[in-house]
Image (cartoon, rainbow, N blue to C red; front, side, top):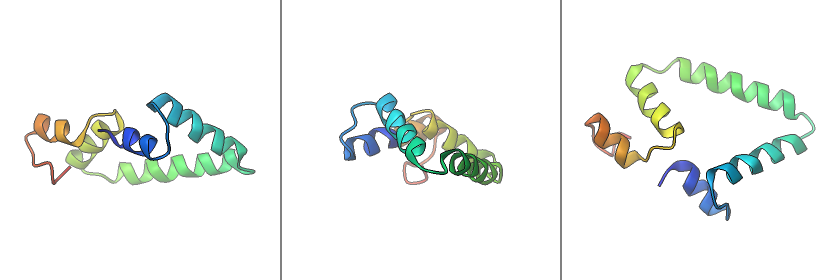
Length: 82
């Protein structure tokens, strides 16, 4: 199960699109939504830019919705690494 699916299930959200819609709505209701979102994107971008090739590859697969189990199998690494 992907991270998005686990988070969604914890909050009663049925699918990834609904999860993102809820997150977008929450950000829009924030008084500084644009500033907060821009700062968050910059922070995440800076953090991901510091990754070496392998952590970046693993993170990208997770963000694309792949499970840790599938990512580990596809990359030939232990599930504990993912």
